Length: 406
Ligand SMILES: Cc1ncc(COP(=O)(O)O)c(CN[C@@H]2CONC2=O)c1O
Image (spheres, rainbow, N blue to C red):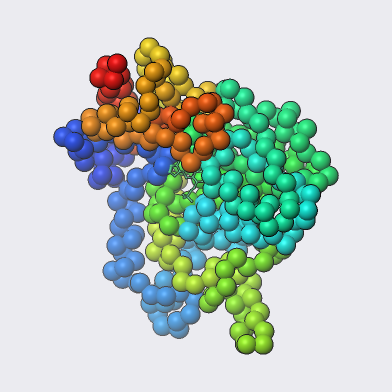
């Protein structure tokens, strides 16, 4: 099989040549945000150098060029997720914005006693907006439990479903555990009860190419910065029938058809949900990031990252007192762990002194930490531009940190 040309790929990421505290940077915080290749940076410079203009309004050439590029990016994203229509792709500022847009939209569609289901392994962005929705409507939030392996208990999910279930929302992949959830089964089962499903794809998007038509998902949300794109831009995919039902989320320019003090009428999709001047460059760069990742190929990326995950897991397990959280048979390249008797924060701080960037804490998933009765974890997350050698440096640094702390 073709070897994965990681050294060649690393040339695309200038930041990987950085040193931190006198050591070569080992960037293992990809679950927080991925790095940006120069191919995406070039698009950003090109935009601001050659066709920066406001979109959809001006009749001048620059505005038309910017509009065309922005709408071409929307189509690229539509094709990537295999959405049926381009106007089912709504540009947002990221996953959090997309989830809030949908949760807000359901305010007028839920009533006292309706039930909405969340999984036990959610990021706070996919918990708090729904709690706010329950406060507004009197709907009840119920939790799909997980087991000690970091997998959802499907039988419990089925038991929770009933005629009052209106919404189910969960992540495709857990950012804290790496677990890949069986979303196709969950979507089909939820639809049997007439419930809509929102999937938080933030953590899945850099590893898995979701096909929203095959999944038959109602809403799918992602952030560009997880997929080698810029921060502050993302996408909400929504089935047309659902997006037509939801009221606008923000009022302003762009999302209107006619405005008068007597009455305002709204624009159709997608502009109904795109008030104000968008992150034009971010959207165009998001399209470039998707091209970049597809150029390498998601199958090749998934295979290589899985090899990194297997290697790192085996090496970590050689360390006495190692406790890994989340060992689902299907997981992406994220490892959350603790070492018995040590605080994750201390390990993270010490390995940073040796150039290793990992995330420590609750990873915006406090319910998961409560479930495992821990203050937090050390989370190492790998991307297709990381190497086996970097894992060796990481393992050495963890061992050194352990010695220093004991
Ligand atoms: C599963 C999941 N959902 C939602 C979000 C929120 O995305 P935005 O911040 O782009 O709106 C994140 C971000 N992951 C966080 C960000 O930092 N560390 C993490 O694991 C995530 O991993």
